[in-house]
Image (cartoon, rainbow, N blue to C red; front, side, top):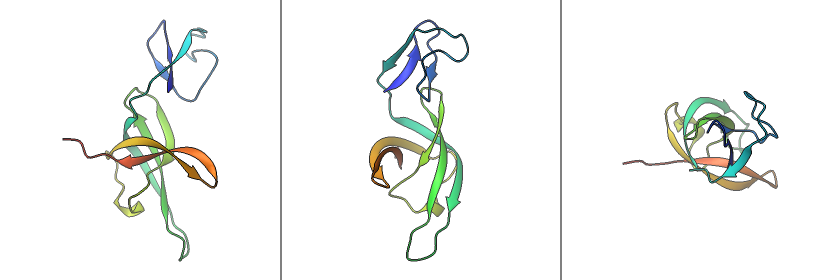
Length: 105
């Protein structure tokens, strides 16, 4: 789910009480597509045996940009422009939105 302003149609992330551009209090929760594209990548290198992981900025299909991780893929393989799809996983024993590479036709 993602917030959208009924009056402007703009989507917002992170959740808020008011539209940050118009201050309208008409935000509603709507289903999100879960799709996005990697905008930026930073690899967090760990000492073995821990695996490196990447932190990414993802441009959501709805417009907002969010920070997350790409999972189920070697950190060194994640590239700008990679199409991804959101999922919820547990990271550090907390639920988190992460992304997996999506193979689009």
